[in-house]
Length: 448
Ligand code: SAH
Ligand code: SF4
Ligand code: F3S
Image (tube, helix red, strand yellow):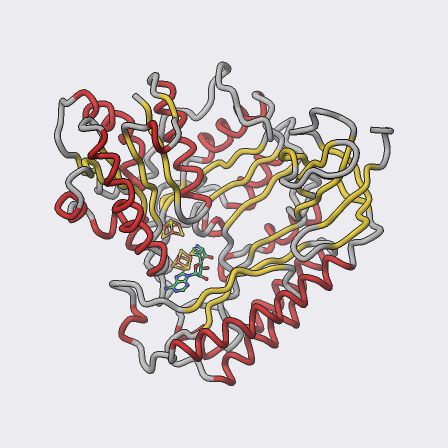
């Protein structure tokens, strides 16, 4: 059976899709281009209205394949599936499976039964009380991506209920995965040649703090994974500032393979807005974390998420966000206009910010961020870096091959080499130029 997966949303969704593709391949299915597939899987995101609307337009678009092939059917998974549920069956008759994140472990079997005609429609939308383990992602025979990077889930769901956020409703309560299962998966990946691991969860800093019976802290888990042989680079995402432990901050100065970068969503710079958002920290606490992170690891690269136009945000509140973005000097940020999400607390909060005003705030913020990004990248010119090569650059010009990779902090670096295969290697370079969102390097060390 040929399948095609379309993924929206965060790294957790990307990882879920990768797992699903591997699990289907293990059953003899084959991933195919859109026009050749019989089964379409949409892994969806509901965090703002825009990605939700995209799901409906994608389904409208792939409906034409149902006319071409009567066996064709679609499965909708992820956060919109959890939110909208069986309503998809009514709106799009070719949708025959809806599955939430906790249902993903059973999705390959459900797809098989549907493809065999054993069942007509299936919904996997129940939340589990404990982390639902899936089939192992790898065994000795698995071929992993050449880039030698992998994601590992350490938890599912979120208990924070930030006022604007739909995730606790679509991903359910926080469930930490058993630490031994995490370590075992990381070991298996390392044994298969993976050298860069990213530990994933909506709020990794609260690992072990749910009722799942796990009594290992995130700092301890981090140490156990960092100690695995062959792991050159370790990252984790996402961190909530309220739960970051001193031991995690200190780990940045102690663990050699813990990458010098942290995505630490600030969301807003005004204490009043943070309070209304129910983020449970203020800027004093946030800035203290930043200072301590920089003490532990002076070259740490900080990035963030920001929302503009949260209900009640005044011009003064917004200016605090600008001030704080400048004060911290985030190397880059994702910034969003506030979007009302069904069932969240902020839907009922007033006054709503006028959409044109919110748009103008977003533009002002992004302009400031671009200037800071430019400055911080410029500071790296002349410095050495180690680049884990992810593949060939999109643009190929001049002599040799142009390669694209990431430095330890995750910045994109392009460089040229006469070598024909460098993917998955760590190559030493010196930064020679800063572009808008990337760096250019020159090889150093070996005469490549
Ligand atoms: N668990 C992560 C965030 C997941 S959602 C964390 O807590 O950091 C990713 C980002 O989307 C959030 O950080 C926030 O900036 C943004 N976001 C979430 N809900 C939103 C909404 N209703 N409107 C606009 N942006 C939103
Ligand atoms: Fe959403 Fe807040 Fe949970 Fe992040 S911590 S997923 S923003 S509720
Ligand atoms: Fe989107 Fe769900 Fe991730 S709403 S951001 S796919 S947790």
